[in-house]
Length: 394
Ligand code: NAD
Image 1 (cartoon, protein in one colour):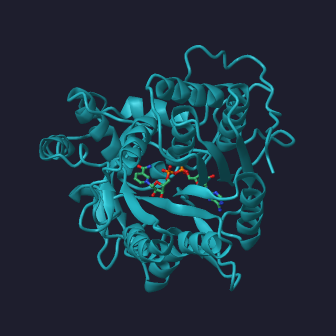
Image 2: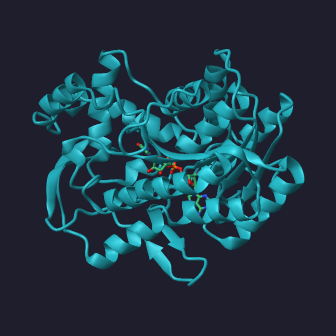
């Protein structure tokens, strides 16, 4: 099939298998340059197919030579549809892990369900005995509660007051003002149900009850804070309420894990281009300014650089958590000089000057790359096999 990008709203509904493979190989190359060692050896990654979860899995395997079980929710190709990017990423990851002799297995299904939790525990018992680290990296628009069957949807809205700010259509580079009405109480509650800590807690409870966590096991979930520009839509908005809940859950889990000398904490990561962050109004414009400022200061990081930094902190035993039980990997994003420069640019952006003042072109290219497009050494006019099998899938 000849595969080109196709969009529904802002979502790309096609993915190129060879490009996705390249994305994975580039991350592996990056990790293998370092001589990493030590620490955890049996890793469970929940949400392992794209973004921060995929990079966590790559660092664990190709950096720390750990065995991994990844939980993903992806689709393989069928009829005239390509597979999803996460499917192709994971297929490429599994193939490389096999080639280099690393244990890895993938479970494809709804991580929010009891069925997938049970399946995972069964696999851990069979192949690992116990795991020593659990990474929780889910970003989802909806969640079915496994006890009540109720489906909640996450909303990306401000709370109490409408929010007005600049935003960009990153396909046309048109800058406009967006006004988003505040969320209802029900929308806030549903967003917390999806992106808060409920499911993370269900996972850790289930893993502990079944005694498949090693003595001293660690669990981490990812969060975001961000700058004042995005506060109303992010940290003080519906998603921010969910992140507050996730962070409060880390404290509860930390207490609970003391029974096995374990630890739970949050990693506050930096803003960057992923499938999830691209869907949040205003965030793509902010990321394209941030990217320019951080590259000019030579301090830009992507998912793989962030995850290398996170795992080296964990393995060094020098976590340096803030007062809220969080590692701050957003330290460089939030630096005063960086944020002052972002604000200075922000106020001046218009449709006419956006390509000069920001890295919007790079944002667009990075977005396409998430789906395997825009790699200069791939001929996108050529037929490619979209029916990629996944080895090691349970
Ligand atoms: P992403 O969209 O790239 O990845 C989400 C992952 O969740 C994918 O692997 C997907 O398959 C998986 N997933 C979604 N629903 C699932 C389900 N029901 N069952 C199993 N797997 C499921 O997102 P991301 O940006 O990497 O986000 C991961 C975490 O990092 C989120 O908590 C997010 O808030 C946080 N974070 C993101 C940013 C950013 O800028 N992207 C910054 C800081 C923190």
